[in-house]
Structures are given as structure tokens and as C-alpha cells.
Length: 457
Image (cartoon, rainbow, N blue to C red; front, top):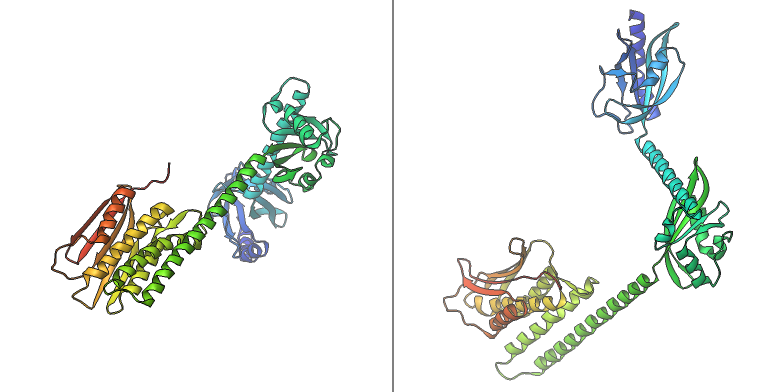
């Protein structure tokens, strides 16, 4: 390359960045080599406002005609060339190439590349879809000649429409469907949208495939409309209609049952709170000496059960309870009610969210209530402050739920299995089919409940 040609390439390369930014494209200069079958990239510019086509610089990379034919066409004398090309990194790009002239001599090429991978993918999908619809059309055509009976083997009502939306073919299921819900004999030539006007929008919206659910004459259908294409031109439509009326009825029944269950939960919660209000009223009016403590324990148990239904209603769940939220609600309530003369802190540790059905959640609620109450009644008799840690987790290895309540109480007395702890043991073993243990450790007292629950069969 002469010095004059070299200087021109250098001057042009200094302008590449502006060209790249203006066109939002990668821009390159390629120059010939001694080997006529390859050229080399001598300059490049990456647009600042869009993502580059290349992960690394391609300066110094060789370019071959097999991958970028437009470059070689221009080097042979063509004024301008535009092709699809494959980059060194395997991306499909639209490549525009123009010659760099020095007098009458072509000394290189100026190249602009834009990523069209998504465009090519869409074109390929359209091509595949066109082939598929053509195949379907051929199947229908052969069916009309009694060669293949594929449409009569499917459960859906099947119709082929011409470009005027008239029925050109129908299967046996389609014939029966129209007879049942329209009271009309299905015949070729009938206008489909006169039979089902609400389907017209699906046939005229321009989409190749449209899937919608529609109510037609007190029946629900899932309707699939597929354009028939020939050389990119719409020549008709295929319609598949699946009767989903029974499915919709079951869906409505499920919604009604969910609403009924929600109402039951609401009434149970209200009834429990009414009982709790009666107990509170009695406590305010006066109780026999020494009985207030037992009334408060009973009140806490009732409110713990009510908390299960409050959590269900708060989370708009049908029957699942967020156990983490439930235990926190119960713990905070008990500590607030029971610690007027002490400073007791309660912390919660949970690994992941645990949800259980309401009947199991009621058992867990009662257990949590009794264990936390036991801490408050017995752990801190010799101190004015303390801490309770509630740890809730799911043990993946043993496939079991674990609830631990650890206190920092200081006591030298032996365990007395109170009525509350007997409740915990009974519920754990009988209702949850789990295990319960309580023991001293270097922190205080640790109570542990472990049970398996995999859901209803």
C-alpha cells in the first residue's frame, strides 16, 4: 500500500467513531492482503449508544469471502453491496459495504454492521409456521378426498375457512357442536362469523396464531385461530374449538368453595374472639382469689387458636397458614399480657417460609403458646429480665419441622410437668405424631418439638 493510500485510510479511520454513533452500528475498514482470498480488519469503531456486536476487538482479524461475500464483491468493483453476513463470533448481521477509493483504485472497504439475529429468528419462525400451516392445509385437503381422516380423530371441533371466512371444511365434532348449540346443520359455504360473531376479531386481527377463551351460547370454548399462508399471503384460517364448559363450572365451584371456607374461618375467628371477650369481661368484674392466672392462661389458648384464622384471613389463603407469622403473633401477645413486672425480650429465628394447613397450625399454635407461657411462668422467677429465643425451621435431612423455645432463665428447681407441658406432650404425640423434649443447658432451658408433615394425601 502506498503512503498516500495509507494516509487516506488513517484519515478515514479518525472519522469512524462519529459514523458508528450516528448509525448506531459497528463500523470497520477492511484492506486487501497479498492473498486475494482474504482481507484484514485495520480499523473499527463501536457505537457508544448501543451494545457492540463483538465481545473483543477484531482489528487484525482476517476476513474470508465465505462469511462476508459483500466485502469481496465491492473489492472487485461493485459500487455498493448489502448482505447478511456471519461475524467472526458467529452472529448474523446486516452488512453494508462501500469502497474506499484513491483515484480509480479501490484501496479498502468501509463496512457498517447491524445485528439482525432476532429478525432472522422471526423470519425462520414465520417460514416454519408457513410450512406447518401448509402441511395442515394439505391434511385437510386430503381428508376431503377421504384419503386421511386426521381431523375426525381429534376431540376439538375443527373448521377450515376460506379467505371470505366461509366454512370450507369441518370435522364430525364440529358438525355436532354446531348442531347442538346453534340448532343448525353445518354445511360448507356457511359464514363462520355469522354463526359466531364474537370470533370475528380473532380472525381479522392480523396475528398468525390467536388463542382465546370465549363464551358462545352458554358454552365456554378455548378457540385457536391459525392463518393459512401461501407465499406470505393469507389464504384462509384453521379453527380449533375445545369445549371447556365443564372446566369452567369446576372453576366456579372451586371459587365458591374457597369463599365458603373463608367465611367459615371468619366466623370461627369471630366466635373465638367473642368467647375471649366474655372471659375478659369476667376477669374485669372480679374473680375468686388465685384464679386470675388460670383465666389468663385459658384466654391465651383461645386467642392462640384465633390467631390461626387471623393469619389465614390476612394472607387471603384458603387453608394455608404462615407459621412464622403465626408464632410471632402468639409470642408477642403472650409477652405483652404476662410481663407487667419484668423486662422480657423475645426474638424469632426462621429458616425459610413454612406454611401448614389450618388443623396442623392450630396444634402448632397451642404448642407455641404453652412453651412461651411456661418460660414466663417458671424461667424468670429469680430475675427481673430475660430473653426467649423461638427458632422455627424445616430439617431437610429428616424431612421434619422443628420448633425450639430457649430461655435464659436461672433456676435450680427440678422440672415440674405442669398442665401446659402436658398439653404440649399430648398434642405433639397424638395430633402431630412427633416428639417433645425439654432439658437444661448452659443458657437456660430448651424445649423442642419435632414432627413430620408432608401434606394431605
